[in-house]
Image (cartoon, rainbow, N blue to C red):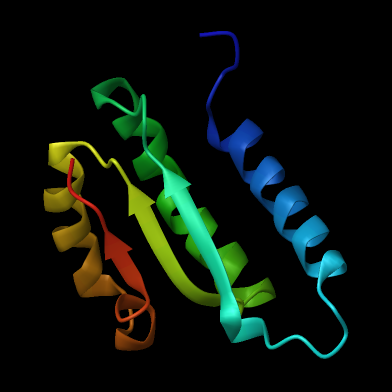
Length: 106
């Protein structure tokens, strides 16, 4: 791997990407109509530690700074273990978030 995927590198990238997206919205755009597509291609067991380390800080950043931005989210090609992790994480997320997330099977 060329890039170190750590919370210290990934979280600032996520915030920068979100800030750029928000700035590009038309003035009259509805924030809750924004769709996110997360491509898990190449994501494997080696990435689980980073995913766990990013979960809480990501939720806090998005919850405080972009609370209504997610209209829907689609996870593409998540590895098999991700379905189990999602099931565990989903107990801590509000229903308003859960109803916006869809995962595709391989």
